[in-house]
Length: 99
Image (cartoon, rainbow, N blue to C red; front, side):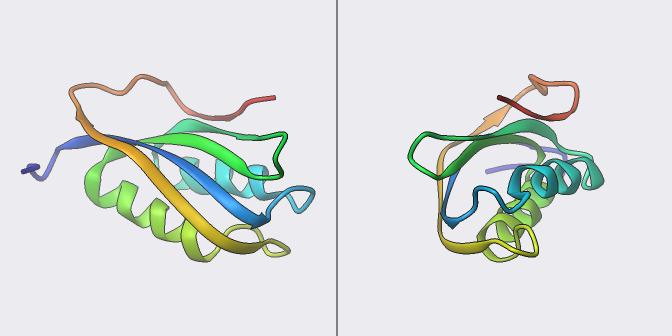
């Protein structure tokens, strides 16, 4: 389905103790470290949502990080990934925190 250089985009929502524990800061740092692009933000329902884009293999690493690691003080109950699709070019220039 995807080639070695296939770019993908995926939306995510992280449930658990993920607000007030620097989850967004660490997510932005991890996204930049992996050279991915996208965004992260808090929601009124105490979850964190965002979108990540990049090469499929690297996005999979980020998904695993979001599912299992997060920030040192966070406690992740569940990570939901939706709208995963192949894209022809990146829609963002870097990884940012939205407010």
